[in-house]
Length: 217
Image (cartoon, rainbow, N blue to C red; front, side, top):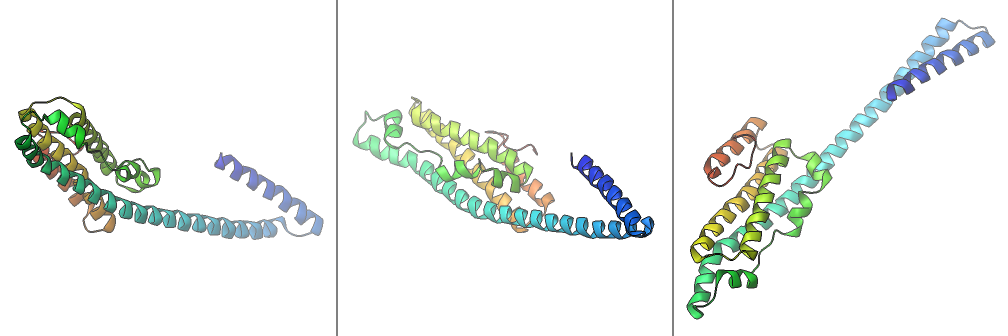
């Protein structure tokens, strides 16, 4: 569409220049040259302004992503800490009431993904600013974390299965937090893109018994 508009403008300028040069008795070639020079200056100015505006927008999106991901990663770390404390707290509860089940315990102590994490990873401005590798890895890690927490909160499990599910949930939450931290390091320029990919690969090697949260494994 922009191509046809540009062609239309060129044709319009040609007609106007021809008419003006004939009416004023001036050389068409000279007048056309002036118009072309003016047009080049105008279009160059507009292009430069647009480029600067886009660059400024990218910088604002990057700053927003850094602030939000930093907060979100800390929130996930807090949730992971809560999950790690569950076995000990459950054991203490059972020592007081031997009939206390893991299902009842989790009904009383349900844990969910913080709202800011959901919001951050569904914000189009943040998703546009972060690396595609992070978008993919974070989507998988978030989905896994939600499913694991949902199983913890709602599934009737044995005590042995409960402890196994705790470990798996913690792996997913740690992956979610780690991938956000990798992106923060990349956004800040602390690591190169190659180092960024290497970190994803190494993380997947350590956690592939639970999940493949990254395309680069």
